[in-house]
Length: 507
Image (tube, rainbow, N blue to C red):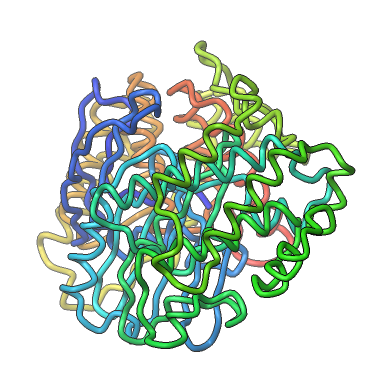
């Protein structure tokens, strides 16, 4: 929840002043700039080392509600969704320490995978190697997995032309990886194929990490595992082709069927019985025959008899019948819309709004100011526990700076308030979500939405479930023309406020 998750990636508005915000003693390393993603609209992705504090905030303290994938007990790792300070959603894969006991090895491998950039991959954008923690951070794909669309669909199955596109795009991803010297992909299956916000299929980058000491290259049933892996426990480039063959079977049948069973059907030349009945015959028999034959070649027992990635791409490229139809249309999902170019207040959520929510929905800075003055510091209770020894002269000076800031804030002298509150924050002995919220409003009053957003996010870091922090973020996001994100943040704030009212700490 929220966007407190700064790893100080590329700023949303680089033309404005940028600087790192420190929370107590936490510091953040600079990002590594990478080339724009091909076909990605020129957007520059960055690869960074994230702090565990950031990722914990991004995933709402690794809440079970944020889990999007998990694996077995022998190789425990979880994938969470999370949100960065620039509102970008991310996928966070959490390993047990035993999977990567050597932090240097983990970091080096992550950096290697992080150099890969391709429009057919859900690219790796960072890692965390903080103490015993081992985490990978990738682009988040919001439209589920191929497995979900094939095996557990609710509204419609995937049409034949889209299945052919999925096969081609994943073949292109594997060919790119092979060309870049990373032909080994661990545990390729329908759960590793993800759908971007525009519906295009992408291959998860997590499978590109080398096998770890206690991890597993294959977590699926042994019936789907390459025979040579069962013999020697090693993943080879040919093993990846075998796994690609199992994905082709998934696309053909709409079911996860063992390769041995599928090969028996193919040998019996009963191809129609292999096809997904939910297609209702709406596919080309000639095209299906080509895909069946390609799957059969991929599933050959002898690795040397399987095709290579370039063969896969060449074969599947000839089968594309709807190149001009967007993926989201064939997949049956809404088109991703960019936010309007003109600033608008965040749209009002369905549930009733509090006075603070109403003021933020209207972007009424005067009303927000009155509410913050009336609230004073009651929400800071419990956020600081100071020993007697910490009541030094520096502490007294810091509190005096806050007092001067409070006076300036009441008088709407926003520039003086910013200076005084900054003195308080820079000392770092005491953190106050209220001070961050007040300074955020002062920045908004001075038409500086970027630092206002940063302060609102820092307020959330100090107090992760404080509605005011979310409300302030919604206003700053609206000022930055990020209207959909502003509306989402307003809804999150309202939900938190309701939760507080039902029982717990008042907001």
